[in-house]
Image 1 (spheres, rainbow, N blue to C red):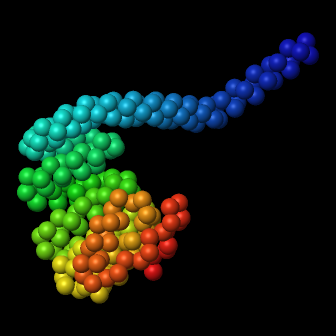
Image 2 (tube, one colour):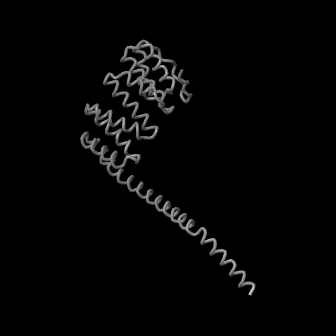
Image 3 (cartoon, rainbow, N blue to C red):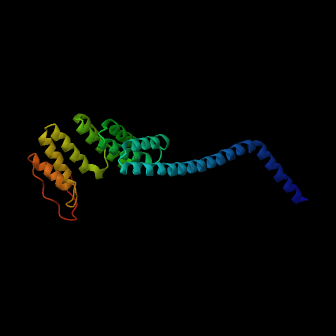
Length: 224
């Protein structure tokens, strides 16, 4: 009998607890299960979008190889509109920008590069801004180009940024500043860098002297 009495007390306590907190626990459970289902759906949607974007990006690359700028730009626009959250979208913008630039469509090239600079990861942002600065150089929008290069870049792009700054400064006939920019670019390059010789030629063409090349395997000197 003592056991039955104790069991009844436990049941009564459980009923009282459920009467007081049952609705709250039910809603908490619904929220947790809903969040889990939502997360799974989001993951499924993300994978599905990436797969679909991959197909379009493959078509875009084939069009680029065929030098069909119109198809490249259309495919890029589709990817950017439907799959902007995927990694393929900013890459598509870079390919479309090059295709447009090669077709002398600077307006479209600029728009695509700006899109990539706003939506890509830090590496793609840097590449897009560097290429956009080259378009601005072609358009003689020198101050705008320098302003773009004055922003923050990942350290591995420092030499490329300094090199492009030198190009713009040469176009402005600011040769002393250009020489400093080229020297800074060289300071961040090692001996084996394929772009080093070109920077040296540009520096020497405006009366500068290239610093000694670093030894093989040596770390490049820090830019001043």
